[in-house]
Image 1 (cartoon, rainbow, N blue to C red):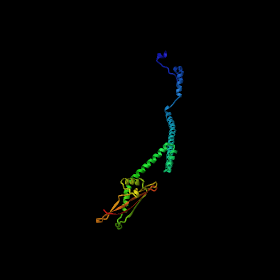
Image 2: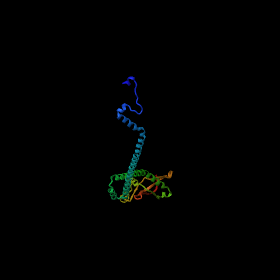
Image 3: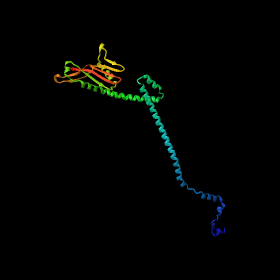
Image 4: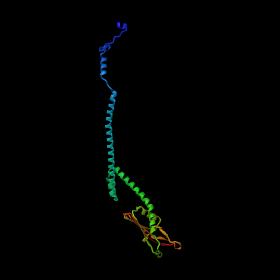
Amino acid sequence: AQHRATGVVLLPLPGMSSSADAASPPRAAARAAAASDVTTPVAEQPSKRAASRSGQKPAAAKRKLEQQGKKEQEEAAKRARSQECENLQAALLAAAPSADKVLEVLQAESVTATLANVVTKLAIQAKARAAENAARVETLWPSIEKQLQAQMAFSKNLKSGCQKQLKVEVPMVPVEAPRSWLQKYEDEGRIMVGAKDKKLVTDTSSQLKFTANVPLGKACGWGWTSGSLVVRNGLTFTYCKQSRQLTITGKYGLGLF
């Protein structure tokens, strides 16, 4: 009371605790614990980032290895399927042209997808060949006609009724060519007949042969001596189905306009 009356406040001397601190030992203990437990959370953040990064690297490497392994497995499976298709295709080509052997190969294949892939591949190849053959057939006869006309030459012997030989050999001819010409000449009534009015047509497993009255000629001479060289008794087409060689023969002579 006297201290408050005089307005003088007594401060504790160093080493002495205040009455408030003495009266509350739990608070003093908390402060001491807080002073001794000095933490630096900011300083710990870099170490945490480094730890998280070091943990991410093995995970990324693992994912990369898994993806690479999966890709290699897919490629290996793709190569295996491709090899199976090639084996089946080779077996079918070896079995042809025997229909029974081809059927045996097809029945032995249990994987439908492989069978479908091979059939599709063969169909695509056949379609491409058909297009190539069709394009060649269109240009083949004009080329043969020019070769035949180039062989037809005027000579004095032709005036006496002599005939000269024509012959053209063409290798690797698609069978569609002579068949299309045969059909055309039959439709136009140009197939020649032999004994007993039998058409001169022979079609076997190895050969296709027919004789047709082909309108083939070449002008020759000039003025009052002008005339033409014409094919006599038609042209004979002989096609070998094994070698695919076409031979066209005939004779030509002098025919006046």
